[in-house]
Length: 461
Image (cartoon, rainbow, N blue to C red):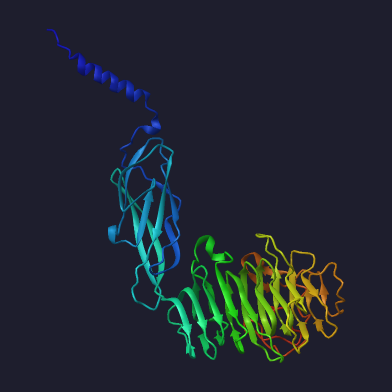
């Protein structure tokens, strides 16, 4: 009995067999239900995000460890109502079907978050999941962030005495202007976040009343990723010639162009600014820039500034006691010594006031040869430099023997902004008793106080 052969179908069958035999194994799609994907992390975390503020983009890498290809469906569990967005191969969506991963290949998924306001004072958790369905095998990766509602301020003019709240953070989109004769009071735990170009301008006075365990924070609004320690992201705090006595206690000022700028020429020695128990860091110019002013500072830490940690120019009365000035960062090129003092200015109007500087029980350190610089032109200038640890390899200024030169202070870990003293520090027990009885963390100083803002606590065996 003979058989009829459909030559067309036979040709197609032969072509299919030939095609399969020539297809690389990594392109053959597996239907094995036991196959599972691998992920670069089991949770995509975001730092605290302010409501209505877009996050940075986080990434998730997906791996197909099998020799054969797979197709997977990827979706946000929260769908269109999710606070998160995902991007795959440049496309934005919440649900992607039949996404192909060749054998041994990987896929990059980008994730963003945008938190809606809940009108809540306390931070809240925002959770979702990315779901992966591969040959009926379901896997998931968590998405997690903290949301925070805030007070959003555009341009704010303070015309009378005002006490801020610490209940929610403040997002300053432009500036705060404290008018003449007005006082802005900021309580412990208050957080002020500034957008690019934001500033505080003080014609009146500012009173920051933080606490060692609950300081007041001034910083840039972006705190995620590379932004967390980026300098120059807002302008800083400026005190004009009209300003009157301001006090800053237990504050953290970060990531600005200038931490504090003050220009207040007068003929008295009453402090225009009293600053204590405060950290100023990550400045693209100066930590403190003072012109013809009077400053009283103690338990002050200034670090990671591209020009000077502290720069004082012109007449004035400057007293720094138990301060740590450290510019030892290697991530940027510096342009000046850590502390720099000039007793006159070429364009300085005549003032019936001399230049007086007192440096006592401080640490002045950095990665340059000379971290304490002077330009002294006035015979009437008075300078007292005693009981300090100073980086100064070759300088004409005659430092008294009470100072320690060029012995490393041995900070705990300056790379991560830790400037407490290690047990091997040359600064331990080298200070002289002053009116500063506690350190920046409110630890009591002993009868042999340590240099700098931190008192080393000896362990009792």
